Image (cartoon, rainbow, N blue to C red):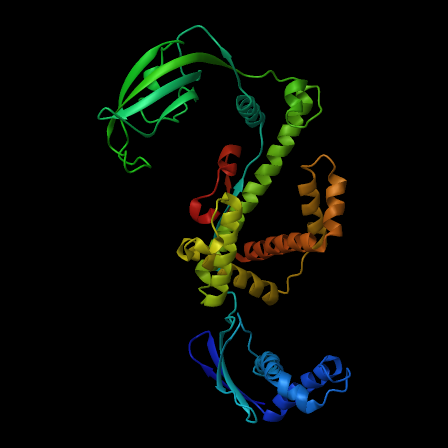
Length: 436
């Protein structure tokens, strides 16, 4: 087998591979012999069909199959011989593909980039320091109560935080418009759900009242056909209901799957969950800063094949998440290209760091992470057992731990400063760029 390599770009390689005709014919004959043993042809006993008949009937198919297998095998042999790491399937172009002649073809493909991870000392990381205090737990209890608010009808004028049941008809220039009317809509005054002036115009209304609200849609309204236009809404108030927060009792605690009868025990459980959320939020923000730093310090050219593959994965995830009657390939690739490229580059950098620093997953940390995830379930031991019986899921956890160990390796060399913040600031979502 003869092989020559040409570099057509930083990552693209062009292999010209020559295979002796004898190897092709050997593979063709091997397949014809296998066919002869099982072929059923009228007038001949099984296994006794003359090879000339077998060749006449099956040689073309056998040759095509042999060529495909030989190309696949010789391409693999060639990249191993040349110490190349293909990042995707090759594009194969035949040069000589004739019976009785040496096979010659060109395989064009991209390779993985070769680089070393550098610049760890230049990465700046702000490590947040926070703890859950009693006031944070008090605030969380109020949030949980508000999430489970009940509403009771009252015979008085509506005020902010009341829930109204309303019918309304919206008109522009005297004509009703699409999406501008509804019946039996529940609206909490002060929620900001409606356009400016709508909710304010219903403060002071009672059940049975009818009001006409003259409003203007915001210039940046999501429906461009309505943006900036004046409209009138005829609103009928069907009922007014007052918010009633639930009591902090055993019945309320049970809503969260916590079988505790005392407020102290419930607070302790809430605090434990908040502390877990705090640890995860701080860890995620540190990781985001480390990953941003690695990207900035290590510009890596990535194979288009890897980005395209990641784009397709993100398309599938988007369809699974948002549903709808749409196929993944119908989503424009450009929607996902930036995120896909970021993920591919980070994957390459992390893989190189694992190799460069000889990092192996710490099995104690793997166990600890599984136990932490299992703690959120009623039967944690069953969850732990499930992970250790499912190799694929266990390997996913190992990958997460491996990333954490990569982050730890960076933090040992990076410029890290600590910053004391409140619980709320620590758990506040990261910026959109980081979250991506």
